[in-house]
Image 1 (tube, rainbow, N blue to C red):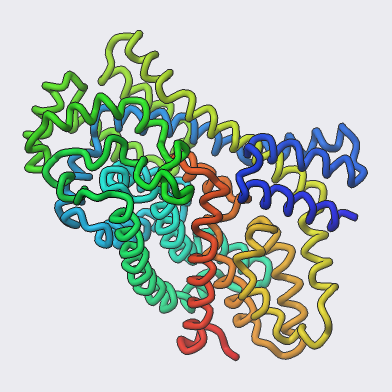
Image 2 (cartoon, helix red, strand yellow; image 1 turned 120 degrees about the vertical axis):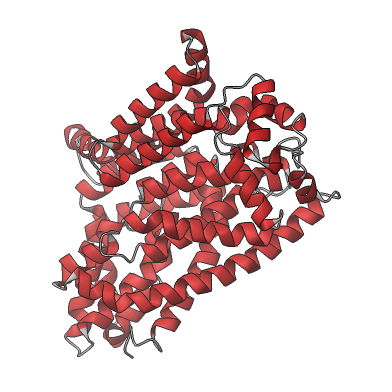
Length: 484
């Protein structure tokens, strides 16, 4: 009964989110609650499930709210403009070059293994550039998520540690076997980014008769609103959901300032003078050091992330907007998006709490194994590896590695399959899907920062990421990672 209800809850939420037929907050709270009642749990038990799930995401929700406010202020004061202009100059407005740079930034940002930190660093810096060039924020999410997933094979990334704990392996030894695959994977992803960049370039060309990137290089905005290109395509980033709260709050005034800045791309000093003329706060040294210091504290993990962003937001407001009415106006400008996305994170906590604490996920994993015919069991690790991406939409990371993997491992090793081969097959097939799964709280953070819709992110990214996951499995065989 638990498996049936759990599958029904997951299928209903995933389908409705992908089709865009239900608001995330509604689906993530109502459907699991109804499912728990149908499974026979009483109100008190469901309340305990909710409290447990809420506790698991509360820190992420607090961090998200204040992170969006903080980076919204940083966009208001144009901190990232010089970086954007430098990247535009390096890529010369080339969409393919920007796509490949995104992969490199994603890899570097994820060296600490934290998905939340990686999104917090990369998206605020890259999203304005994507908007300026008319590129889809969904492409940004796809490339960042895939590059982060490759680096997530680090022993401190999560999946390797979970896999090692559930099968008795040493995480460092598991990772050492994966290093060649990570290197090849990054090279493969750079090639994939180039191909996706060419496709994106064609989409922009079809939607825009004017050579927009050249205008961007001259310091002129490429569109009236960078995310409006390709509005007819729901996956193109042209929908209202594709705009970040921070971009919307001051976009018009900022772009008018840019339009008056004929040489903004020529250097930091000219850009600063133009911004000062536009009447916008411009303290690049203070704000730059503030961001670097804040990210350093996050990586060092010496204070809770939520508190770090609270302190950073306070400093940014006091220095850039000394008057209290100005501070409150900036908070109101970005508060709607921050609280809206924070509410989704809290609703996801309800979803996770009900499915995990009720035992639905563990029961579902066990019953999936029991339904398979005996002839399939020797190939079970490969089948689970191939289906790793779809399973990521049905099972949480913990359920995948602490419920499904032990069952697959025990069944396959009893028939003579190497233990490491089983672990690698399941891990490689699953890890690429880590940052497209609605079970991953950091994905909701990335979605909130990018201003995109979770269902559309899954629709846009799922097939390319699944194809990349299968390619990684195939490449793992000649590299000797998976023994057939």
